[in-house]
Length: 268
Image (cartoon, rainbow, N blue to C red; front, side, top):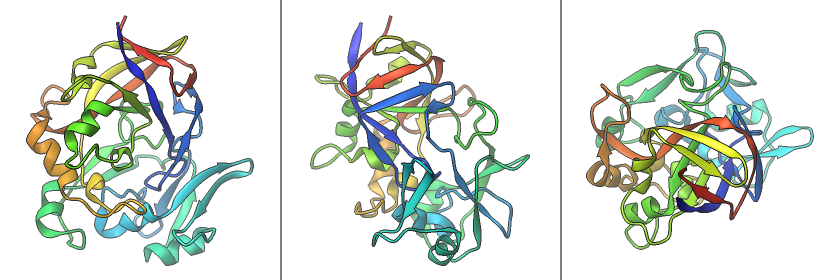
């Protein structure tokens, strides 16, 4: 059964930085080739930098990461190329670039509701999570190697038209014409086929943190980017978690291959 088509492909070479849009992507068990291959390490704490702690790291969402023949290139909002010294100056804390998480690395996630209540400058409680429990080892994925969101979901979460996909940082945007609400909720636990041979296992709805509410490049801060899914799509991502604001789904790769914009997406 056809559920839609690939309407957008996105890669984020540096964790928590802005990414790049693609027309074609190679997919392996590690997701889109070149996705989240670098991250920053806070040299004071030894923790991997993530905008899930907005007080410290929201400025990373002004940095654009691009894949180049010689590696990942980073540029500031005013077009300057950034090295570690430039990133340290921008973020206000000493950082260095790493290509794999340190042993025992955990993800710091500020409690989203406290960020909404007290603002992005407040020192709010946080929870700690293991990296990529549904992803291959030594990767920087929060949970799984692919994140999908449908255009029906982006429309449902918008006010004056669809919300910008960039807020939710998907890898694949699935065009779902004629659908209403949050159709990808029904994909959880099922296999999706994309194009000629790519097979994905959809494993969980995606619980939302404070990141979608933050300014992303030219997109302004929008607290409603969390409040809307809290009102409209509060579901249980995994057994025992309880209902949470969700938008999109996580998937792991059963069979890789090439994906192109316009490829059909189907449920067998």
